[in-house]
Picture 1 (cartoon, one colour):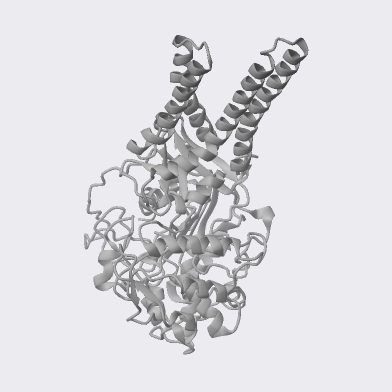
Picture 2 (cartoon, helix red, strand yellow; picture 1 turned 180 degrees about the horizontal axis):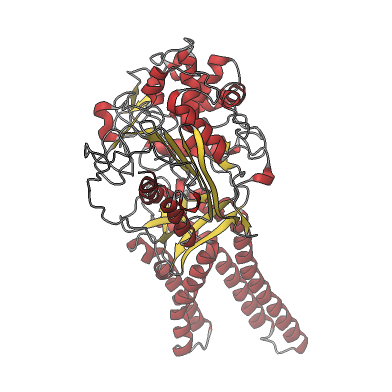
Length: 618
């Protein structure tokens, strides 16, 4: 799948809804309506209940405060943390550790948001009234004037504090990453917004007959002409343009090679939705999980050279992983000692037991905190790979290595091992070997030319349809953007162009560079792109269809029964922002589409777009 889990995307939701971080404006108006709704009973009391003395005033104020307390703290207990306005605006509160939203959490949250300014204002009002009554009882004119002035000032201080507190909340929330309130960070809760989910149509299984053998999905590409003019990849281009019109992403770069020669390259749409600047083929994209096959190849070349074995234990090079703990069960907090040492094959096949973010189990919860620390560093210093491994080794594995499959940080650990094996930084090793050998001069682990940045545009949907807005300095799972990171993510850190990545895909066809030099044995390359899971395939979660298994860092097609029909043996991976790639060795064709939408619409690309692409090349 290639899509890295996001902290806010890993919460349980029903099948008809998807949840994203709530927009600040939506949260503000929901809060405004909540205050209005909760104030209605108080207004009714003041209209129909006659306040004539301090006793009746106390009754009126107390009833109003009780109503507010019931509305914000008691009612939400019966509606999973929701108030009427949250229901109206499609909002909900969730706990990052999948815990129940308790009365204590709601009370502390509202103490910060509402009760502090409300109580301060109320105290000012009480003080104002008390001073006025105390100093005007003797009837002296000077005392009356002083009491009136003091009461007026106290009232205005109360109002000013009330307004100032809400301005403070707005400003601090706006300045926080992802617009999260400080109290929500402390309580480990988030406000999410429900969005419409794209429902995939029911796809009827069909047998496509292209050749005499009548096997499904067999494609004759031998007569594919390099020069087909405007009709070349017409279905693919139409699919891209339709998705741009529907605002699933703002633009794309689409690249295809046949027989290791580029036959098609085209940019679509716009790059900067704010400035309306066009997309172009030379832009540098964040590849995210399309980094994984690159790191895998870097390691397999070391295996090919006899420096390391796939069956070696990783503790041979990374001793911190020798003595680990493992969850007793996936739903338990209890741990047991490691019984199966982690090997490099476990890393290559995602069967070591590492995870990404999440809240479904203790490993995911601790990994969420781990990745947060990776991004921000400690004491003003970013982690290097030694720090990365030391801290990761403190987290219990989800399962005993080799007993299950889970998409996680295995390839990042592999990058750390490459540093130890080569006595060279992971980034420098890639630059000096694979990137140099393949002529990938526009690939690195930081944004080396900001003038060519493929901007990230945040996608959202609502009653008015899809919207896209530019997100500056997008740093998800990144230490640095425009500087070389201390520990570039081997599973997610690559910056590259469409043509550079296509050079890598062409290399995966036969292990040779453009000059015909064999950079890796075909035997080892074939191991990468074949089913490596066997019986563990039942645990492999791939959204395209059930015809796929997992090799070394890539999906691998082992059957060709479900749409979209491609080719048995086709393999590849995709990335967080929607970019996708495939290598079709039987037909000697490679393809990659580079996108920059957050979140990426990986399933839409790997179904609708892949289907359109294979209509063009059949």
